[in-house]
Amino acid sequence: MPNSSSVSEFLLLALTDTRELKLLHFALFLGIYLAALLGNGLILSAVACHHRLHTPMYFFLLNLALLDLGCISTTLPKAMANALWDTRAISYQGCAAQVFFFVFLVVAEYSLLTVMAYDRYVAICKPLHYGSLVGSRACAQMAAAAWGSGFLNAVLHTANTFSLPLCQGSVVDQFFCEIPHILKLSCSNTYLREVRALVFSVFLAFGCFVFIVLSYVQIFRAVLRMPSEQGRHKAFSTCLPHLSVVSLFVSTAIFAYLKPPSISSLSLDLVVSFLYSVVPPVVNPLIYSMRNQELKNAVRKLFPYMLL
Image (cartoon, rainbow, N blue to C red):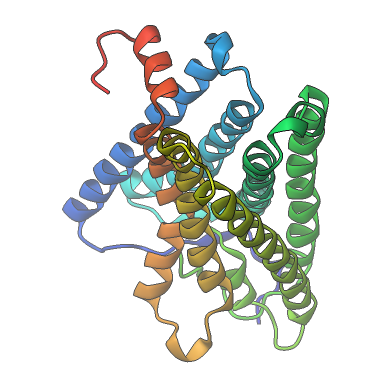
């Protein structure tokens, strides 16, 4: 039986055996990756270069764009390289690095989405205290806490996962190194420590989700009491994009890690993982800019020939 000391590389999922379809997958992944780079790059440029966007909401949006770029850059480039060079291999160290950075960035993003919900809650429900509760120092501390929580979770889960002996080969049934699929390769009963760590992280994530939901209950109650229709429209335009992003991210990630084995299948696992790891970095810039006139104007000033 092979174990972790004898595994020098893993074999990722081959989406197809046909060379032409592999090139088509490469082109599709490249298009998705470039779209994510463009969208998040525009947000980074607009927020960094326009002083009117130097506010807490846009500071957090800048951090979200950075995390999205990092998240999609952790998974798609390797998948593109494998499709282009007709291989499935990823080194043991490369797989560990992919797990570390993916967990780091995903957990940091979820923590940041929780912070952004708090920012919207204070802005709408406690506007007179906004300057004192969400000042520049508080923003930096909350953003640092989000990044720090991602780092600590990444260290915990990467160390737990790659300390397990592997007795079931080295084939990972996913297009990137994902913890649940690596656990399937471990010896029976030895993976329970990491499963407990995952369950603990899921409960923490659920706590954050409850906080987000309660924040938005208070936000919508406050918005519906606003006498001005223009005020209600502005409040909804800043809150609904965030709520859409949270819903997509949380629902697909929770389903990926907590779905019962009875409904698990290769194609379903692939679709769900694609939805929470690849889709959000691509659609987040569209969601946040669609109803945000300030952001659109800032991008137009930077790139006057772009159609937004």
